[in-house]
Length: 397
Ligand SMILES: NC(=O)C1=CN([C@@H]2O[C@H](COP(=O)(O)OP(=O)(O)OC[C@H]3O[C@@H](n4cnc5c(N)ncnc54)[C@H](OP(=O)(O)O)[C@@H]3O)[C@@H](O)[C@H]2O)C=CC1
Ligand SMILES: CC(=O)[C@@H](O)[C@H](O)COP(=O)(O)O
Ligand SMILES: [Mn+2]
Image (cartoon, rainbow, N blue to C red; front, side, top):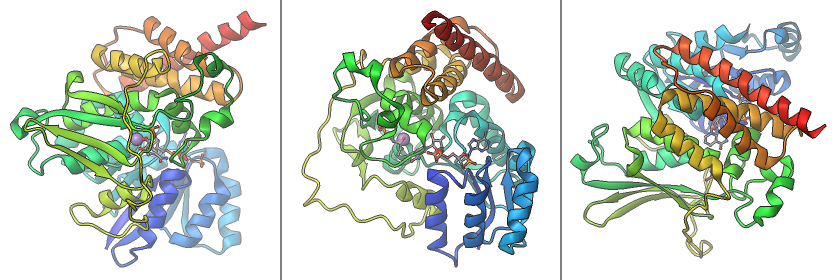
């Protein structure tokens, strides 16, 4: 029996993880479920999973959540506050940590799991974008097992040879990594209309059912940009090793091209329970509840290249990846602030990339030697992005 801690249990990945875990009660037991402030949702999940702990990172939730636990007749222990996330993620009793908090808030608890040498299932790509080298060094130093859950990286991982040597594609005869992306809901929207698209339209991903932040990132293709950076750290790649390919159907989740002309692709219906089940059971396989791919209904596989004028965020991310850690941390911070402002109706869709570009241009050249420095730099960049947005508001009024 393996004890699982699900960070970000109330989100899209968290709920899918619970779905897979509950299909295998003889193999997995839920030790802890965490959320930010979704008290009711978390209590409902606790009724289903009977965890030892539930954690709400918003410390103000304690009183109300305690009462809700009593009302539900559960003897689950309640913890509140940001430190409690790291505490359950690194607890001795835990074998597997699903890192599925959205955004930079996932960094410290994910690092805590890594430093405790856990099997870490990484959905929270932002933590790797923010701290890539330090993160990967910690994985090695603490003997953690890092398994990619992001569908593209899980696909690449499945298509790599079992003896793949980190940062040595040539040794395995690999010529390139083909990172696929759908192009989001605005792939065919006239460019002139993009400035007027709404948050609801941006969150309506054509193939995947995901949280709001990643859905907006898919629409701008910042998601693919973050994934480009994520792939570089996970597999030790150079920028020139990766090609981004538009594949609107999201059936192929990414590919590995070999020097003999072979291309290995991982395919499946777009349902995150596949990579989640793969990560949970690796190196074995378990049922995930995902319907088998039906090749009689999948008629079209199309491929294209992303247009720079439609997806400036993708190219900002590639540039940041080439510039270094300070730039990827700055870009991630700016993007989180800009996406939140877009969702709140404070800026337009095309202004997300403008805020990001202005912020990374302004915030340059900073040495980041430890996680505390990353956290401080992240905060500085968030403040800078917020000021850029405030200046836009002043100009508009
Ligand atoms: N959804 C998907 O299919 C995919 C997601 N990912 C990645 O997985 C991560 C999660 O995405 P997704 O599930 O869509 O996100 P959701 O927005 O659906 O869920 C986010 C989760 O994080 C919690 N959370 C939010 N803010 C904080 C905070 N400040 N401190 C602690 N917990 C917090 C939320 O709790 P509460 O409910 O209380 O707000 C919720 O449990 C992201 O990094 C995303 O990029 C990667 C590939 C696919
Ligand atoms: C499911 C998943 O991994 C998402 O990151 C997905 O890839 C988003 O779709 P896009 O390909 O549109 O970014
Ligand atoms: Mn992805």
